[in-house]
Amino acid sequence: MGWENVKGRRYFYEITYTNGKRTRKCWGSGPEAHQAEARVNLARAQRRIAKARLEDAKARDRHIDNLVANFNEDVQSILTNHFNRAGLYYTRGEWRAARNQ
Amino acid sequence: MNATEPQTNPEAFKQLGEDLRHIAVEALRGIPSPDSLPYGQPKVTVSCDIESTIAQIDVYVEELRQELQYDDANPFDKLLIEQILVAWVQWYVAGWLLDGELAQKRSWRENQYFTQRYQQCQSRLTRAIAQLSKLRLIHPCRLRIQFRADGSSIPQRRTPRKANLASALSR
Image (cartoon, rainbow over all chains, first blue to last red; front, side, top):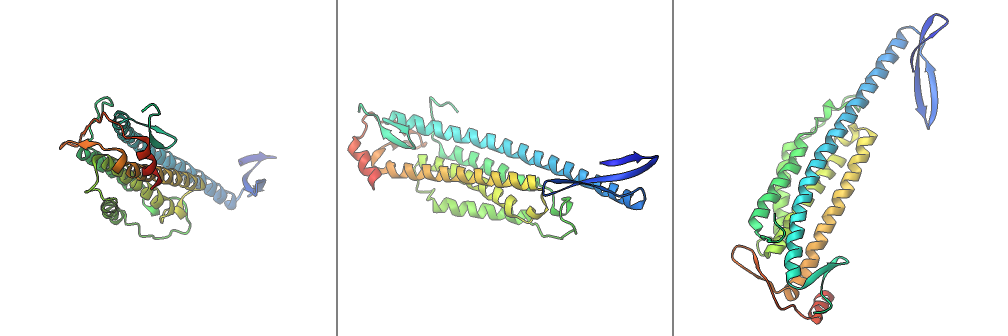
């Protein structure tokens, strides 16, 4: 993709994918070629921005998730501790009494 | 927090839950405005009032707190209710990001991520609610734990019989 020299002249080629099929289109070397180049560069920049934005969102969510996980861990440890002292243990999604009691 | 000496202080957890919800909601302010997003030609003017959404979340959280009977709950229930409220806010924010006005202007990859995020938050919320319901199911007759004024529990030496557990779970 981009400018290619063919027999001493520069031609702009754009590659598009339609239903998984790769298509290579030549825009010539005139104003249309420059417009196509600008469009391709813009799309590339947009993809880069979208990727950075997604990475930001992931980092933000990861930070929140870590804090919430610590909070949940505290809650679980308190519950487990109290219930164990009350003679219960957690198994298969529910609290049960120990068998020997 | 030290797990060997648990402190079931609901007020501390309430504050902690409040902070976490605040952080989760603040994520909405960090997102770019719809018009600055590169996708969606021609440019569409959309109203995206994040401040009103944030204020609405606070109202919903209070309603949910009342619905879960926070004021009448015992300290253990209060901990789990805080857990639910945090999970609910995360779920709401994820849903807002997924289905909001921004969705049409995002890339396919972003939409895929926000869909996964929404499903993840939904399952966490479901788990938190299920845990509270199980605790409430066994608590009245199964766990006769006495609470002190500061919210900590007095350890019980005698454990109830299995028959009590069976009757509690069958209700």
